[in-house]
Image (spheres, rainbow, N blue to C red):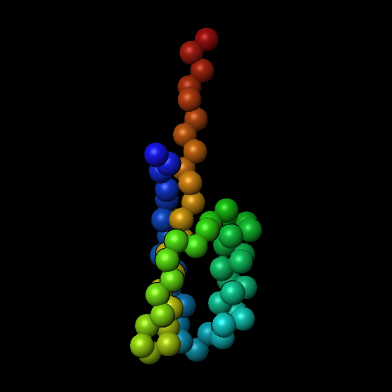
Length: 62
């Protein structure tokens, strides 16, 4: 089963949808994060959980 690393990002209510999309796109492109969960709060703020796969390196035994 794959292991994931998680990062929580808080987007305040004053941030436009376009700016939030740009922020998440930058995380996805440069940090290799993908969207795990997005929660829209009643006050208009967003709580975003991003995840990326942890790649374990096996040690060489030679």
